[in-house]
Image 1 (spheres, rainbow, N blue to C red):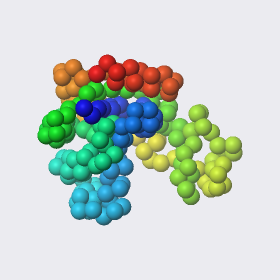
Image 2: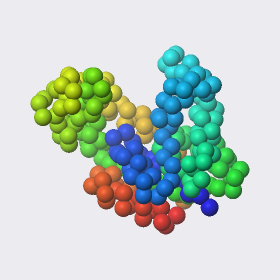
Image 3: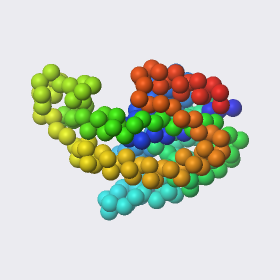
Length: 217
């Protein structure tokens, strides 16, 4: 039996970091929907071109395109032990689709950790982020400040704040996330798969809680 984890949590809660750590510790593949889109578009696959056509128009990529990308990825050889799904599913429709595709091979989602943290902590984490203009190196005004304010330590280029990282945008992103994801959270809670994990702890402690939740599943 393979193991499939759906990792939920708002922007800034550390899902990506935890998914990478879990993947190393468990041998499960880390499937990030963001990486999947970038890879498909970069390689100009049929699905990538289709997704790009919607993104260029500023429209959401339809569920069936996203689902097809995930289906293509989840049955690759590196997923033989299972996978950690990060950023997918986002809606109950997508949740039903992933369940159906796994059921085809006699598998199912084992556990859905929902990493949470108070909004003020998420806002501080996200709005403190600064990016190097030349090569995209990331800094944080509190957790990882540059040696010289406004200048990248590595290549000396200017640091700037992306629109996504500004306080008002961050607040909107958090609000939209909860509005869009609450039906999904309710869906997994009803199925007895949801496990809430406190994301405002030290990184190693969040990992310990995730491993414990996985062992119980």
